[in-house]
Amino acid sequence: MRLFIIRHAEHDPKSGVDPPLLAAGHAQAARLAQAVKPFKLDRVVSSTLKRAIQTATPLAQALQVPLLTEPDLVDIRIGELATWEPAGRAEWERITDRWRSGDLAAAPPGGET
Image (cartoon, rainbow, N blue to C red; front, side, top):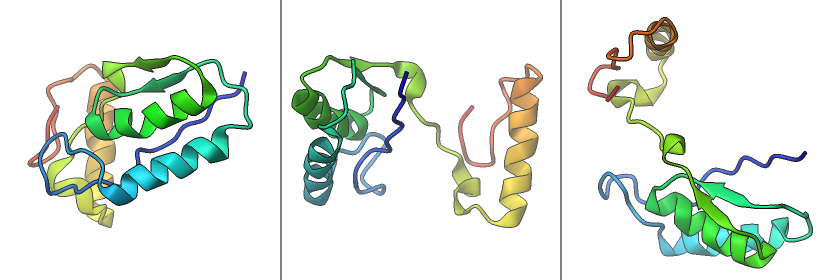
């Protein structure tokens, strides 16, 4: 089995919770579809976010395979930790440790659970 993990194409992160791709992102998705076309994949799975679906759609079309959406692939907002400063990385580890221990209410500062 082969698994390709591909991040969504370019979007404007300041344009809301679920922003669509920018024109440049649509062009990136089209190039991605052509680059991956030689591989024989069975399906394309995407989160339910617009930017992910807009990236995955040309890929699924080029490969002539189904595009499935999976809500559990949606990312979360990590608030103040988004800068990934060293202190933020340590805090992120503490939060994910709490999640692994069952404390699903733990949230990064200014982020979501």
